[in-house]
Length: 374
Image 1 (spheres, rainbow, N blue to C red):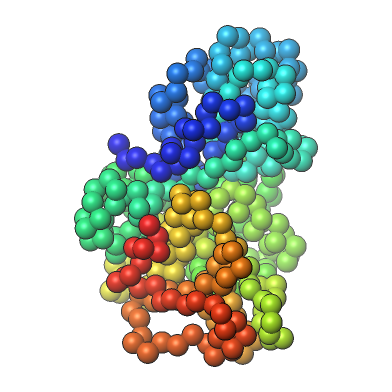
Image 2 (cartoon, rainbow, N blue to C red):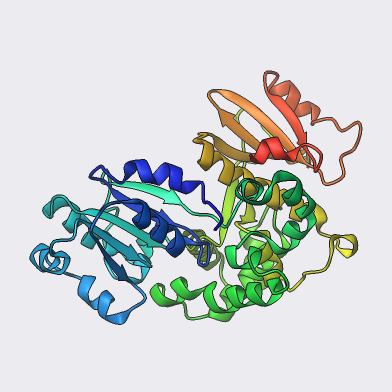
């Protein structure tokens, strides 16, 4: 079994009173992780699955008295696929506040806001973690760094979903199933989206623009949606953990972009499934995009594993000078360019170096990426 680094962050918190929430994309391994957490604990566990209709009925709009009866003498309640349960946040809040000595651990493949009719019911009562697809670091630990490094081009194409990694030869079929069967399930369940075909068009448009500055106006024209609906769907896609956005960095220069966003997918394989392109790198015209998406998504995983706190941005000016990725950590700026084939004499934009003279800069290539992603 491939060891997940998140276990080391979660297990020490199993003995306090806070709720543990594990969020992440569908098929990223949340159920397996929950099973490992339970196996490592000495608690009397009641396991409920939100995909089951009777469980949804039991936990939706319940009173604390009814919940006490349901939990009985168990001192740990596990709720898998919690996003399927209406008002799941309020249900967990009632358990936390009224049934002492019960540890609640819940997972969800979308942010619980999709199922909640009240805002932030668990504020101050939870530890929240994010389970990504497998990481380069986890696979290096599992099979050795040299073996994983040899698979780098394969990972750029097929990504790190657990079933994809553990089923060599079936990657395309599994990724297409994830893309076709699971991708929009939570959104269509809760948001009453009336034009799912337009949502699919939007995701495809974003996949082709991965790592690029996106225009809501252009996306609206491409999909036939209005600009406000595009913005709403983008937020929902983030809450369903399909994409994430980086804002533009601006502090000193008048011509820095101030309200722009770049889009990334949490997994390269899923992105390639959406655009229906699993061609090898040698015959692709999007290798730079794949490399940038891979490195930034792996960096996000690494930062959680190591507890690195940073603000994340990209930088661009109206005159088209740009930097792929910027971190602001402890008052310092760190600028990074992602280059699959690095230019020997690449120089970061003079405007950035002049405006932020104390910043540090690095080029991330296949020769030096491992330290950056763990």
